[in-house]
Length: 304
Ligand code: SF4
Ligand code: SF4
Image 1 (spheres, rainbow, N blue to C red):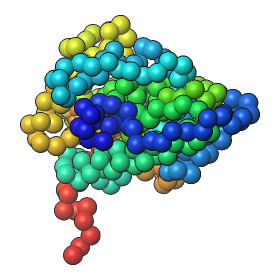
Image 2: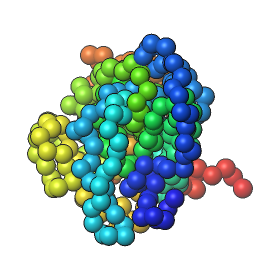
Image 3: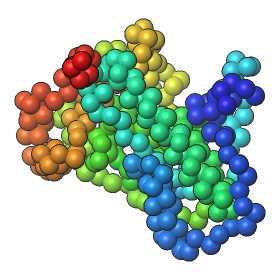
């Protein structure tokens, strides 16, 4: 669906490779039962993380971008889609260790591709049950506040969501739907407190796009939200750097101490330490073990 009919599915417009659904709605039980069923189905379809939040008009873009017109076009999200299913896909952490590189760019690309498959599958499933569903990646609305509202992670100084399962190494998509689903609640596991004593991302950012210091309402430029007190990165500086190196960057993902392989017991123990009063020790251990250092791309490949 790329550029035909002035669409860029997943980046400027919602994913649209969908069929019409059933005329009648299947009863999914209570909102809690319905949410449990849809999450179960989403995991079966390949989702690594699933949470549900209420639709929030603040996060919807006022306009979309028309490639053909070179300017705005309406953001025509239908009314009444009151629930947002947020889906997270983990990125390959060994590829992220090489950031910035073509390999870490592949981790990002694979995250998007897997996200598209899962979002389309779950959205079509909802349609087949008789509900409306609009699957969305970077288009239509911000993903970060929805991922936080859906209880999938906490906000970090680098402007990204940090999850207890994959740290920052995760991508988010969302589905707007009218299926009656119970909502999740935001979680807290010590990220904010860690960001107050850590500056690995702002120190490591080559474009100086991540300021150190407390949350503010300051805006760097028109690409920032108005009226939200938070850590705010200069996304235009960040993206200008990407265009200079002709690749995406992800250094802030690599250096963040929460970016770890949590299938390993010692990293789960580190997460507990990071969420405790001993977070300074956790940070010291992270630096001492050298986690977050850049791995050379040729070290990623097995010996020929
Ligand atoms: S992706 Fe790179 S340039 Fe952008 S904020 Fe992160 S570290 Fe900075
Ligand atoms: S690198 Fe440190 S300051 Fe930046 S988001 Fe991660 S924990 Fe927070």
